[in-house]
Image (cartoon, rainbow, N blue to C red; front, side, top):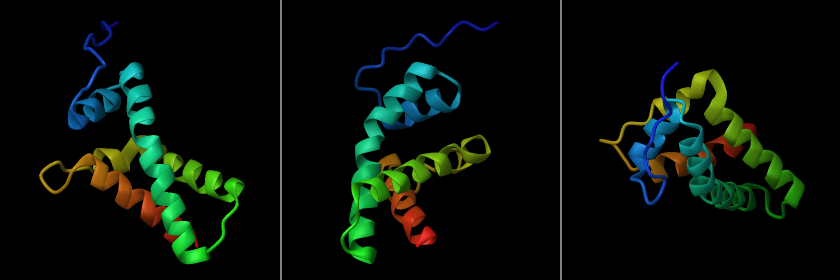
Length: 105
């Protein structure tokens, strides 16, 4: 059994946080979720308002949940595809959170 990662979960650089989460560090994943959930919610809401107009809170929550499922699907494939040389993790997450509702609509 390997020892748990012992890094401070303070203001960690996003790329390091993502890698720790992908490596199975539960605390890193929890912080990753807290850090990017608001961005996902805002991106989904903006997209839904743009394409559907008035959207209920329940509909919005369903789309946010679908974004998180898409990020976790196939062993977190979409997160593993992130390339820090092309954009920031925030930009990557925002793009995924925008495209997911569009694809479903």
